[in-house]
Amino acid sequence: MVEYPLVETGLPLGVTSLSCARSAAARHGFRQAVESYGRLATDRDQPELTERWFDAHLSWASAYAVDGDETGTQEVLQEFRQQVRRYRPAKAAAWEERAAELLAHARKVREEM
Image 1 (cartoon, rainbow, N blue to C red):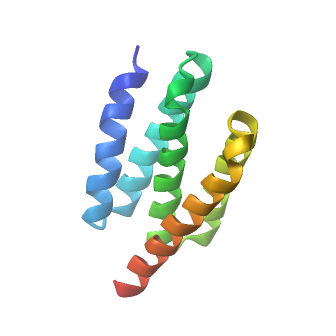
Image 2 (cartoon, rainbow, N blue to C red; image 1 turned 135 degrees about the vertical axis):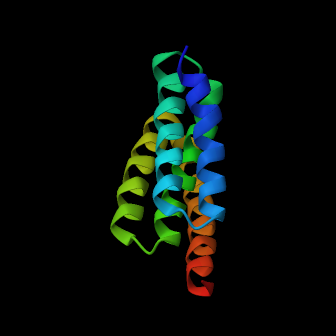
């Protein structure tokens, strides 16, 4: 199953690239993780990976926020919110709070650059 290696490479690529100010590579890695976790959680019937899928969305949105791309941030958040409402509606408020905290941190990092 190709999704596992993509997740295992996508997340570290995103984190490492973001810490090195390589925003395009970071966004690519996080997008790869979002797509792979999404397939695993939904198409491959592994709902235990849903929260990791949501976290990958927030990492992807944060990469856009650190880069100052508000349009990209909002596009990822829109997709994230749709998936949360669909797969974990009872936890939507908690996920929204987590998103706000992470994005506030990402924007602060941007200001300090």
